[in-house]
Image 1 (cartoon, one colour):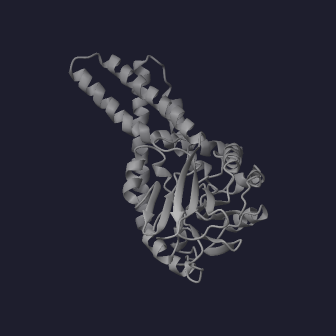
Image 2 (tube, rainbow, N blue to C red):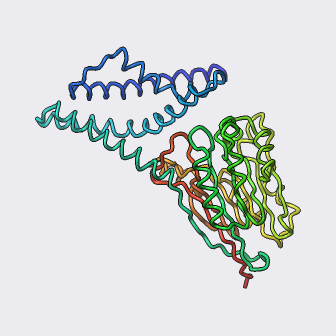
Image 3 (spheres, rainbow, N blue to C red):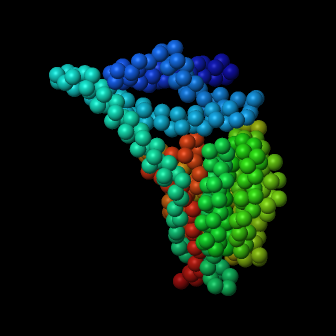
Length: 381
């Protein structure tokens, strides 16, 4: 197994190096056509640094401003890398066809090169706007269980905030402000609140910003895969508890005697050395089935099992709806529901594209969002 993993790693690095060279070669061809004098001894090292910046910034030693800068730069490089690998072959094909048809090669290179640059600029600007300009999506959902005095429960949810070196207090403040405007009865945060490393969360006092969030019946969180990746779960849970936000670790809480909030550990817990997690049927057994059950499970799997176990509302995230188009075509085929709403038997399912971003703050074919899920009591006929 060890040698197999080493072999896979070598192949991956080889392919990645070849793709980086392909991008760099295209850049040199374009700069040469534009008449720019390029020093290869400077050009290639700069490109190499960009290519490894994100990984270098994650090294477990020497954490500081330099490594944080590398993470940010590397994240945006990865974001644009996907589009470079889509656009550059098309540009090369256009140059080849145009040259074969008798067009001036230099003119074709310049035309296709500037087109690629303009498209990348559009992707960066429009994608950033999508990422930093969250929307509220509202659903009214009927359930056949009593919901208190007025027969309604306003559930506000945000997943995948990914607080870290890119998504920070400013974006978190937007979320807190918008949520408070919605006057929530309860707030649910189903995982990936932090982006692996808890250090930016602590250093930038993001808990203080979170502490301004208010809800009549409380705020509750569960774990996502990134909390597991970072390895700071115990400290994260402690810091959230200190500001009145319990992180539910395969736990169910009866809230004000009216409804249950249940938080599952993330599916990552099923991996080796992560301690496992309880089956949803075991987690919900013993709860009063006459009371509404709101279930948080970060990754959108096991809808049928959750419905059979008696959940009335299941909220998930994780997918980001691919975050970058055309990745949403992939996530749509990977999950029963990768984004939006569906009814699974008597259970309502809502999967969010997330409030923050993984990697660069770029979204195409997705938006940063908050979900407003208004539960309305309607007796069964």
